[in-house]
Amino acid sequence: MKDLTKSVAIVTGSSSGVGAATARLLASQGCNVVVNYNSNAEGGNKVADQCRALGVECLVVGGSIADDSVCQSMVASAIEKWGRVDILVNNAGTTKFMDHADLDGLDSDDFQRIYAVNVIGCYQMIRAVSKHMQVQDDGGAVVNIASTAAITGIGSSVAYAASKGAMVTMTLSLARSLAPKMRINAVCPGFIEGDWLRKGLGDEKYEELMDFHRRNSPLGVTATAETVADAILHFIIGSQIVTGETLIVDGGRHLTQTPLTRR
Image (cartoon, rainbow, N blue to C red; front, side, top):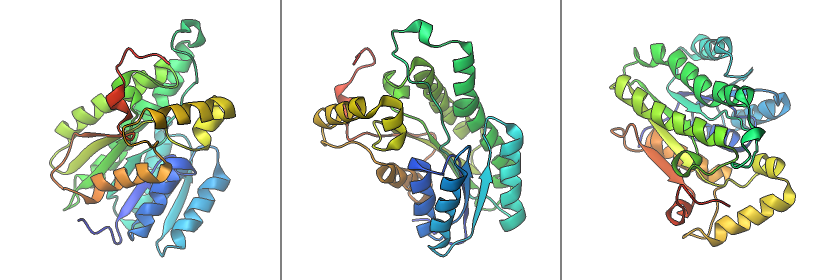
């Protein structure tokens, strides 16, 4: 297992949910952390305080990764403070909840906004850390947070599913081209318990879908922010000869689905 003591991690979209759980888990391993938020400054500062309470140093950087200047500034801040970046977790993401059959429910602006964060922002962050990871003796690790929507075509909207599919493809491309100094893998969670889906779906639909996924999952569970964070950590501290892989984290729910299934 790789020792993360005094390592440096950037976790985008880490003011809540999976990003926050990942920042705290990395901090518990002795890793200094850059916490990033887009609009939730209070959440970002709270997560940073939780990380510091675990004995590590922490920076908080606001801004959307759709803006390349934010990506560059975030990495520059880490380099200025610690002189290196060892880990990037591309967790920031956005969507529009829309029935897949409602083709008029999405327009080009929706696609461009979603792709700007989920795909282009991910690329911009990898580009920003690459120049530093490539010159470090031990390189660096990147984990992209995609979704089972990338595998099944089922998700909050067609644009979201398509963007996560693009993220998985980009993981393959960059894992190949940025090796051997950088390992790049992807985690694909299914239904994740938490406020993000509850807010997007509404309480009644959220509870209905959570129950449905649990009943139809071979393991009888749905993912939580913490179980997804565990999978992310696996790619960081686990086998150091794994790259270009995609790990599905959904209790086995994908085993009971096909890309044509509609709910």
